[in-house]
Image (cartoon, rainbow, N blue to C red):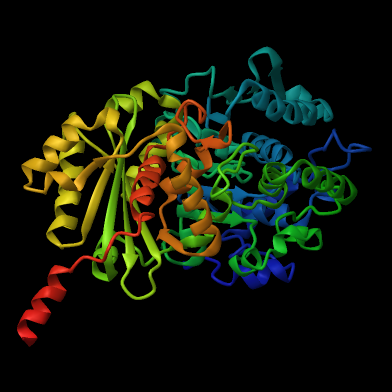
Length: 557
């Protein structure tokens, strides 16, 4: 029996308004039974309380059919166990959750079976529970069969004592659950919570002994750069959809714009809103969305990005706030995947290094800036180090830090001192290449780093203090201008997108400041390190003789 959950031609399908469901039900009889139940549930919050079968769009019915049609009744095993749906706001996610989970409870044959809808907050849990409650109350047979306890958001099947419970992640414990079916609502919100991965593991652990079980992840796009468990699951879902990951037990349905449409800004045209809104004109009211978009455009870039994330499912790569650093607007456009530390050393005539941070609840940031030997473009590469204590002290950003650790932008050191040693190693590598002009440090934290650098026999005169505060304003403005005019390119590093989005500008007389105090609790240390490196490169240092070039010339002579 062969099937695939990949949909490599999804871009053309979604633009042409075709189904992006990659397969038909594996077991049609099971699908038909489930559709018979699902379609006869009532959508009470719609005018006239129509049946689900009369009001749901084909894409919803396809999803229900494939989910329940993947159950092998003879083997008593579900062949596709994980489902991932990402769709724009107001496309009926709560209704889908209610209908799918109530259908699963009705069809369940396991005595005392458990079904769970896991929501990120109490308010979200209430919103998920109400449609289930209303569907039961709207049907006399269902009301007689199920015992509904609103105060604990639990539905109990009187026939076999199976339960459907809606729980809020911020108040409920899911440890020890042996759920047959788990619906994870608003997964993007879980991405902001440090311990979400463990929580979801506990909630879905019951599938190991429930072969008929399933997990259904449902979400909109995040209004902030994706992080944590949401980013991990979204990346995996895209890999399966595109055919890069072969996982027949994972079905991704992702309503998002093709890359070419994003590059051409076609996602900003509401004529294309249907791409990520399969219920466009049904549960998604066109006139209301048009009004919201107009209001967002009047409010500014931050509001527009928030609108595009929620209603157009556009992934936010860099969070732009109202008091943002001006250079952040040009940062993403200047990313180049080819740039790395090695690339900079190979193509530069001179290199400067900046270092900043390093406290127990801080990051230690490093930035390497090279001037291209032919084009004279400035090329930047950054890295950060963090002690594990940061993860405990700053649980609100722990999920992001783990993400950047996995991508290699951030190093989680085991003990204090390892971070300083690794910074010194990079300095030594640049010095050994014969390219180092200077290393710029915050004078307030120069001690340990200076010692580590000198131990590696780097010329002490190469290490200088860079004045901070308003005196760094020139470097900040230079970085802005270089980004805007295309003269500064940098490695494609998600961590730096985050840091740039975190940076807040504080006017100080005729100058501007970007300080940790102005930026709040978010981290900007690698960005501050970049400003230190830029301040040195802005002095137009002379080109250095690259060691390889020296050896080549020596051979020729």
